[in-house]
Length: 333
Image 1 (cartoon, rainbow, N blue to C red):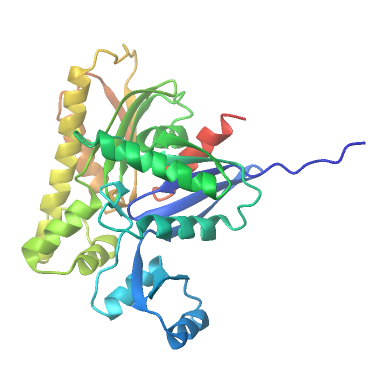
Image 2 (cartoon, rainbow, N blue to C red):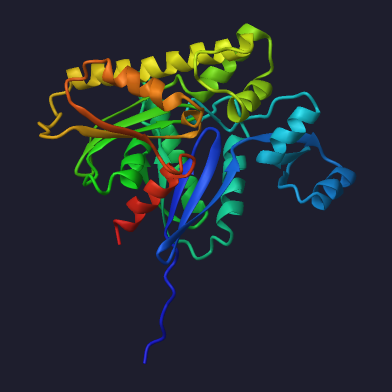
């Protein structure tokens, strides 16, 4: 009689500019673990290390620094009136951050736990913005090599297609998936699970934070805090900062819709669809109150050359891409 072998878990991995999310299958359920994709370097000392251990803060010892990882890095940055360092920029590895890949690898190691069992992992990659194809090639291959070092069997899936996989099973994986992330907005029109059009734009959450901070004199962490906790996109401004946020949100939305119209007009591969196309939206930048009606107005007022059906926000916007990547990994079994 042969012993039963426990198969390695399948994982979906969303390596985003703002957050890293792992989705792991657990029987019929899916569980998520997430961490902010950011870090802060503090001078190394035994006292600092002991303090971080006492507070249960995730960190990595380096030379000559201690790298505080994730959400705690944001908290420490606010305390010390500094900004966090970001391993990724505009959806891909940040070329100016020499320790970025090291931080991403350590964060994934902590999120996945023991990686000795390996297993298949499907990780998200953005679609290229115009002129950024070479950057995407470097980003995708570098992450694949890193995941192989950790013992995984990696393959990639475009972020917009992952949204389709996660949300449009009832539509036979036909429709438009849009991820409004921190570094990029990613869009995919899929037909029966096959990508027809996929593209990215660099005007996303970080673009909004950076420009709203620049025109108001605020620090980007303060802008992010207001945006994530209080801001509503309703045309009423309680402050100059809220007005700036509204302006740059509209700019982001119009850029995505205009680019979608251009790509649909230029493509010869768009299938003849006999029913309206559903649109599902995900990502942290789409969670702001009033965002979905603003996007819906822009989509329905634009002649896209195809009929738009239901437009809805994912039920779990922050975990959608990771879940779609997990579905892509499961499809290979």
